[in-house]
Structures are given as structure tokens and as C-alpha cells.
Length: 158
Ligand SMILES: CC(C)(COP(=O)(O)OP(=O)(O)OC[C@H]1O[C@@H](n2cnc3c(N)ncnc32)[C@H](O)[C@@H]1OP(=O)(O)O)[C@@H](O)C(=O)NCCC(=O)NCCS
Image (tube, rainbow, N blue to C red; front, top):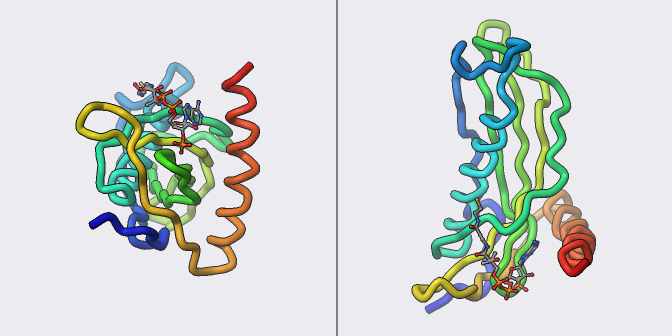
């Protein structure tokens, strides 16, 4: 039986950590942006597959903003949760911080919104459970996700 709705906490990734080594750096000796993007995509994929219970693919990435650099020795701490779902698609919000594990200082490095689509065994979009927000913050994310979807789909049809 398909669950009709699930709270974000049921699928959220609270903390995916990645220790930065020198081979993760760009020529400016800060963390290569593609590494952070990949971490965001992988972490969000886990949320999408937990929420839907199905294989998912990335359909779109929007608002991926690099706010501060991360450096060798930092620990990247990735958090992700589903904001809202529609028939077969889900918006996942991702937050990445760089932590100095000696001092405990953290910097907000990236925020991003990714859209995933769940697929059935034939590789066609498949229905997913609704998201049932449980808190004011989750309700705000749910509502704002609706506004972002409208912009996303308008851009897609251009
Ligand atoms: C994403 C994909 C499955 C959509 O398939 P499609 O045949 O276009 O299916 P539909 O038009 O019926 O769209 C299915 C859902 O995806 C959503 N969608 C598709 N493209 C989207 C986009 N650019 N932004 C947001 N949502 C999108 C649709 O709104 C729809 O959502 P809903 O069912 O919740 O209403 C298909 O385009 C695909 O396989 N893309 C490649 C995915 C991939 O390889 N990702 C890895 C990239 S490296």
C-alpha cells in the first residue's frame, strides 16, 4: 500500500559529513564547487528516495548559491529535507556548512533547491506521497516551494 503523506522528518538527512582533503581543492586552494554540487545532489537523492520509496532522478537544480568558500581541513556538513511533492516530483532543500572541527566554528557555504522525479519500473514518472509539514518552518518551506515550482515550470516551457 502507498503511504499518502509523510512528514519531512521521515526522509530528512540530518548530517552527511565530508572531510575536505587537498585533492578536493581548486587552483585557488578552496573547495572545488563541483564537489559541493555533487554532495548536494547525492544527499538530496537519498531524501527523495526515502520519501518516495522509488528510484529517483534529478530533474532540475535551482538557486544553488555559493555563499562562502570552504578550505582544506574543513568538514562539510550537509543537511537535506523534502519541502514539497507533487504527482511524481519533489523539491528537496539542501544546506551545506563548513565546520572547523577543532574550534567548532561553522560557515554557511551553500543553499540549494533540487527537484527529483520518482520513476516506476518502466522508467516513467511515478506518483509519490504528499508532504505533511509538522512545524511552522516546514509549512513555510512547503508554501515557498509552490512559488518556486511555478517559476521553474515557466522557465522549462520557454
Ligand atoms: C525528469 C524526467 C524524468 C521528466 O520526465 P518527462 O517525461 O519530462 O515527464 P513529465 O513531463 O511527465 O514530468 C514529470 C514530472 O517532472 C517534473 N519536471 C520535469 N522537468 C522539470 C524541471 N525542469 N523542473 C521541475 N520539474 C520538472 C514535472 O513537473 C512533473 O512533475 P509532477 O509529476 O510532480 O507534476 C526526464 O526529463 C528525464 O529523465 N530527465 C533526465 C534525468 C536525468 O538523467 N537526471 C540526471 C542528470 S545528470
